[in-house]
Structure formats: structure tokens, C-alpha cells
Image (tube, rainbow, N blue to C red; front, side, top):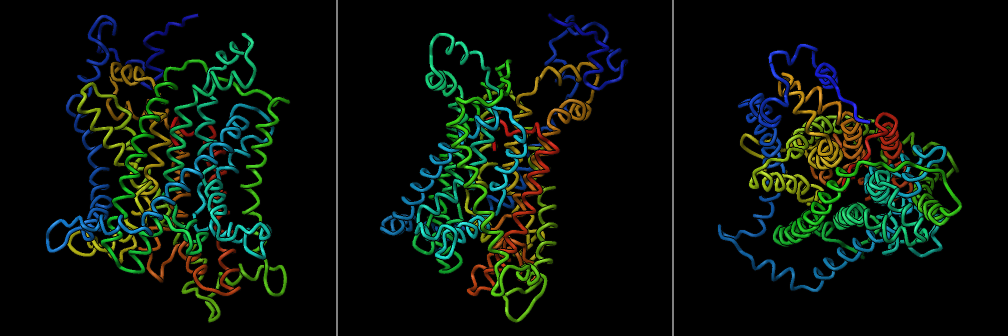
Length: 592
């Protein structure tokens, strides 16, 4: 049954006063089209605001991302004031670097494939089925995604060490340990992204296939899988990207035997000061990232259109006996998620005198027997302050970018420009954090941007890493919103700011809350760029953990495990709050 609303009811729906549109005279259907009235109502103010919303984030990205990265690459490729591309031949002509590039691609593809094999059944169980505690399980499987890679590497090294729980497997320093750690980190991306799309699927086509004689497997392959294909493919691209640019996991678990482009950039920059080789490798990585982001963007837009046009939503159902294979795979993945963390916590309690809290107590003091320059409590305070600042910056930038990118201009040039902005914003996800951190040091050291040694560099670097995640969480929600709500608000006399406050903000409120919490967790655990920028007297907790890991000794290892446990607990609390406060803020199609 169609329900026709009066103008007063429509004004109430968009939060306006009953008399807000009285001066408009005739009914909307008697005058110009709503789009025309919208443009007239907003006028130059709307156009000026749109330009500022796009320009401000681009200026910040240009100054604090493109400029440092470009300057570092330029130092490696420009000799005596002229462009010198011979470095490509020197680097790519060496077998060692070709092996590093090949291993980077191979392990990323293998990790993405394993994540899909385990994550798709998990998406079905956690988003298509209903059982007690499902929201808690969703939150728990998300915890590894926001953990610092240095913590994950330490947890798996403890698990597979000779004296570890699985030391008999012989995986210490092996490729298998690296793949397991990457699946641990990225399993939640597949579950949450594919699960969100699956939860929105209309169940009737699959039910029709079943009624026509198709079995469960055939109905899944011929109907459900085809509808999920864009989401699955886009998620695979993102997981591939994260695994290809992994830093802490390879650095700790590779044991010097295995290197990726990311860790080799760090080695050439920090250890050998060979900027030419580092620049060539950075360009190779940027090209790889660009290709992956373009493919992921195409798949994401296709999936967003599919979700937007879909009107019927699937409903979660109770578990059935036929779901046992998916339940078994999900349970196995759950073991992979839980066991490394439990082992890390238990080992943090081990001391020469037995189980005790001595490792945690040692974090609170600076003694001659450890390498702490400041107590871990100070590092925790530094981490919280910088993460909070970074979150404010990331949310502000991500909100402006999401508002701009959610618009659908008619002009082809404008649409292409916004697509280019979207691609640029995603680059920090794949460009080496080492490149960004070292670029900060060599460029922001003089003139108006002479911020070298300033405490603001760390939150800025962390905000650049977190901003793409904010965009990917908020943007799909805005794109799925009905444009007619904004048009109705403008027709009824609302100003551009009022339209944003009464229409856009309520629509994206939950997603924005979730994005803020995720940005805080990611900034809290950022290690790559922060390891370059944090001063010795003001380390963050991940930097302190890396410092402890790099020094031999049972005391340092015990304190590293204790500090990693504290950091993991802080990230877990943030993730649990995400699902408690914004349980409906699920990642959008192709998002995170």
C-alpha cells in the first residue's frame, strides 16, 4: 500500500519547522524540478563549500603525503639536477631484487587466497545466520585487524618458537608462519565486507533455484556466488594489498631469510642509506598499489550499485545441520584467531621464577637491566595522546572527502576528477610507511614546514594512514542515501548547513562513530612511520615494543610480550566499543 505524506509530514521527516516552506508557494510538482530548485537554493555558497570540502583535504595530502614521498623518490632518481633512470636497470637487473618482488607478489596472493577460503564461510555464519553471542564473535574476530603488525609478529614468533606451543611444527622463520600471520590479520576484512554484502542479499532468487530442484551447492554457485562476486573480488584486492605492503610481520617472522619490497625499502633506507635503490623499489611498490586500487575501485563501484538498487534485504536465520561445514571452517579460523593471543598472554607471565606479573611491573620502571629510556606507562600516554589527535584529523579529513566523493555530478570531467581524488586518498594504504616517515625527515626540516622534531608529525602520519579507512566506512553509507531527502530539505527552505545537519549527519552517524573508533585503534598501533618520527624520549607503545624485540635477553622479551598484551587489550576494548555503540555501522560494499 502506498502512503502519501503531506507537506507538513515531509518537513517533519527532514527536521524542519512546519512553516519552513510556506514561502515557496505552489506545490513542488507544479514548479521546476527539485534538482533545479536545489541548485538555486544553494547558489554560490553551495559551490564554494563544495570546492573547500575537496580542496582542504587535497592540500593536506599534497603537503604531508605526496610532497614527502615524491621528494624521497626524487632524491634517488635525480643526479646532478637531471633525471637518471639507470637505477631501474641496476635494481631490476639483480636477481636478489627480482626474487624479493616475486616473493612479495606470491605471498600476498597466497595470503589473500587463504583469507577467502576461511573468510567466506565465516561471513555466512556470522552475517547470514543467527545464534546467541553472534555480535560478540563478530567483534572478537575483528580485533586482529587493528592490532599492530609488530604485536602480531611477536605473537606468532612466540607460538612457533622452538620452546613454543607449536614449536614441533618447525614453522619458526618459515613462509607458513608468515601466511598464518597474514590470515590472522586480514580474516576480519573478508568476514565483515563479504558478510555485509551477504546480509543484504535478497534470499528469494536462491530459494527459487532450490524450489526448481537445485541443491544447496548448486544454488550457491549459480546464484549467491554470482551476486557476491564483486564484493569477494574487491575484498581479495584489498587483502592482497595489505599483505604485499606488510612490514612488521615480515620483519619479525622473516628472520632475515625472507624479505618483501616493504622491508627491503626499510633496509635500503635505514641501514644502508641507499636512497637510489629505495626510490626504485618505492616506485615499483606504488605502481603495484595503483593497479590494485584501480581494480578494487572498479569492483567496489559495481558492488555499490548492486547494493543500492537492491530493495529486499535478506534476514538472518537460525543455524541448520546443513551449515555444519561452514561452522567447522569458521571454528577453525576462530582457533587461529584466539590461540596466538592466548599464547602471547601466557608467555608474558613467564619469568625465571615461574608465573608472575614481574614483566608487567618492569614496564613501569627504567632500570639498568633493560633498554627502556622511559617507563612503558609514559609510552602508553604518548600513544593515547597521538592516537586521539590523529583520530580527530583523520575523521575531519575523511568526513570532508566522503561528502565530496558521495556526490554524483553530471559532468564527465567532474566525475573523473572525483574518481582520481578517491584513488589518491587510498594511496597511503599501500605506499610504504617507511617511505612516508623517511620522507617527512628529509622534507619537513626547514621553511614554513620545518616540523622536524615536532610532536605533531607523528599524529599527522598516523592520520594519513587512518583517513582511507574512515572514507571506506562512511562513503558507502552516503552513496546509498536517497538524494531526494536532500532535495526535499532544500525545497522546504533548508540552508546547505541545515541540509547536512538534518539529512546527511543522521544517515552517517553510526558509520562515523564506528569509523572514529577504528581510526583510533589503527593510529594506536601504527608502527612503520612512527618508528622513524617518534623521538627517543617520547616513544609510542608500538615503538617501545619494537625496541625491546630488537634487543636479546629474556627480560627484554618478557617485557615486549607484556607490552604487546597491554596494546592488544587496548585495541580489543576499542573494537568491542565499536560494535556496542555502532552495531549497525557495517563496512560498506568493498570497504573494510
